[in-house]
Image (cartoon, rainbow, N blue to C red; front, side, top):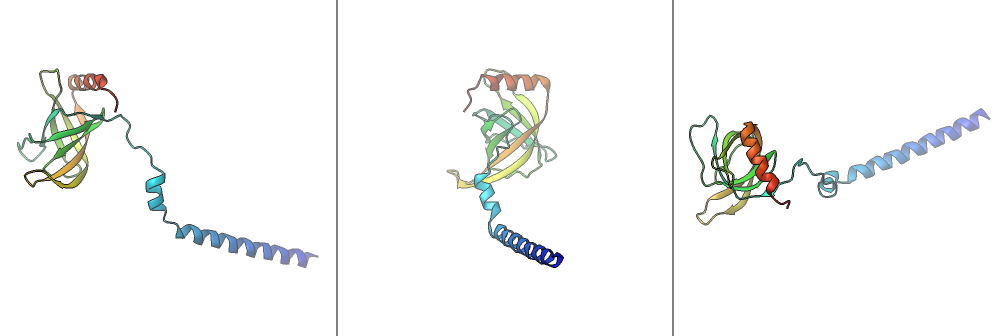
Amino acid sequence: MYLVCAVILLILILILVLISREGLEARKSITHGVANKYWILREKRNFVRFQENMKIRYNRIGSGPTSQDNTKMQNISNSGLCISTYEKLKEKDNLEIEVEVPDFLKPVKLMGSVVWVKELGSFDEQGRRIFYTGIRFGKIRSESKIILMAHLNTMKRP
């Protein structure tokens, strides 16, 4: 009787091992990276982005005075902004930024750091490369933050 139970137990364990091995091989054959990229999308942003075309200038900290006037703002939020520029900035570059907010006399001055850079792959009419650059706000004086937030609160959500 014990021998029959031991044989049945061994057969069940063998079946369990074979089934788990097949399941493992089946999971390995699925390309999870591509599937996750398209089906398990999770929004990383904490704040709403507003499409805004305010004038903006920046200087890279530590590289001397190189004010960039040909920069265009793509969008802005409470925590950062996206600009298009002809200069390829590096991730973690620290910037001094001036944003001319409509209906305010003085530009808003703040610090920011480059979080990402993406080359558009297209060129402007003069043949220059264009880069989108994501900037996270750093140090902002309280007065500047109030002005910036007041302007963002008057804008419509996209």
